[in-house]
Image (cartoon, rainbow, N blue to C red):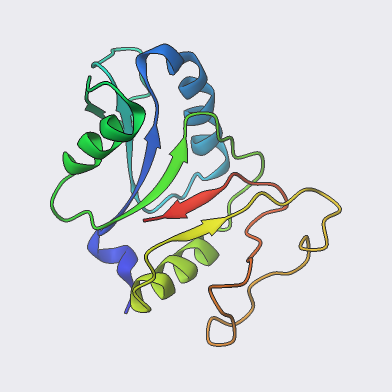
Length: 157
């Protein structure tokens, strides 16, 4: 089953009015390095802004406290969205994302009903640098999979 086609997954960047300048850099890094992104893009902010990249749908909440604000924003996502790839507003993608590998990992996580999947940054020269996904049947989601030489942490909720 390929979950990419049924729009259950989105990319959600948690930001705020105070960090819109940072979000602008994050959005540029996502668009530049994940140009074939198959998921709808959302950004959580406190109030609507004309200065947000128009590829991102804005979800607004002015509730005090980041945790409550994020929960309120996530609850405003369309009902068909069941999974998030969550970026905080200072996560940058610094090289091309291997979308086919993201799709395989996300699909497998959904199939196995994994509640949380985190990808940690891989530094150049890391022992993980060449540890790439070869066959989806062989790997375990408890292992780290490298999707590019350097990338941001991605979390599937």
